[in-house]
Length: 193
Ligand code: IMP
Image 1 (cartoon, helix red, strand yellow):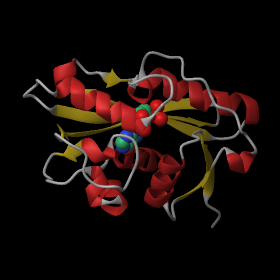
Image 2 (cartoon, rainbow, N blue to C red):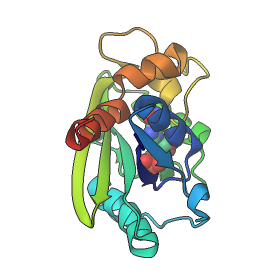
Image 3 (cartoon, rainbow, N blue to C red):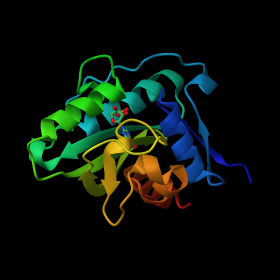
């Protein structure tokens, strides 16, 4: 049987790989390159939900294809939920993960509470109707970077129940327990997969 196709509205190759690995034989995921879209979709909303919707609508309005988008934030308790929706630009507009992690470690230097969570919001548009799914993984921020797998803040995030960061445990394990995996599972359930 033909697999249902969705465009994943992201230019982040890591996110694309993760979601493709999680959805494997259930759904076919097209990248923005696959539909010949080279645009950098502006993320101007001040919530994860708003940005996920902006990205999905951008694709749906121009290409009229079923699609979804993800927006993710790292929410740190001692920083009142920062960097949150501004996680990509935490250390400035260059979207530099090394600089973002450096800033996060500095901000937490004097704090005992290192509790944090990753929150992903998926916006799905199917047959013109919008649906939202959320995935949350709780954990804590390590005192220094560990591991080289993954991307973004992965070298600093230790999920609850584990001693290794996402970057140490590697993609296979991350894809079983991550915020994005949880949101993807909800999307699958909605699609009856
Ligand atoms: P966005 O969802 O692409 O806007 O990502 C926001 C920020 O969080 C960027 O700095 C990403 O690198 C980072 N980020 C998103 N998802 C993850 C993840 O799964 N692990 C670590 N960092 C992530």
